[in-house]
Amino acid sequence: MTPGRLITLEGGEGSGKSTQASRLVDDLRSQGIEAVLTREPGGVPLAEQIRDLILNTRPAASTAEFLLFAAARAEHIAELIKPVIELGQWVVCDRYIDSTRVYQGELSSIPAELISAVETHTVAPYFPDLTLMLDLNPAIGRERALMRGDTNRYDQAEAQVHETIRQGFLDIAAREPDRCVVIDASESEADIAGQISRVVARRFGLSG
Image 1 (cartoon, rainbow, N blue to C red):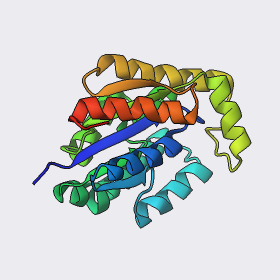
Image 2: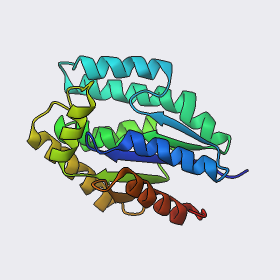
Image 3: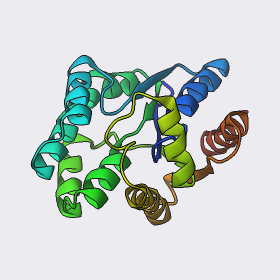
Image 4: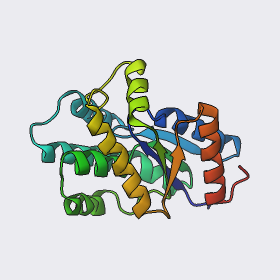
């Protein structure tokens, strides 16, 4: 059986992750690869309920927020990611572990050792085979997010918060170059999709 793969898309608000995740799934399917599109927090019913709670009502304790994200991810992996990958299919996920590392680690000061320990017991061995970091000037991303409507508390955060988020993702990409590839998200939607298609083709030996 062909091994299943997990590809994640990460980046700040308004960087186009959801759009590009959907386009990537379509691209993979056009090449005969069975692929499933999902997102975090969410992806399965219980995790979607936790998503609504997290995005609409911020817990008073940052540790509580972090653990809610971890609970949503554990359920997501058990109910969707693990079974799909075991079938030899591919999963494309809009946000995953790196969002926790940046939003809860960088913004909420959750210790890196705690994040790593929780990942060991909730994520392993379902770490991404490839992570696409969509990089965009935070001012442009924030404007896109606000124009999109239906904003959450992260979309509405101050400019410095968005700068911290961007740098957090770039720092992860620099530390883990074998897993992460930075994508220029300032280009047109079609050009970004082209970048992603070429990266995925090279990484997994596809026709592109």
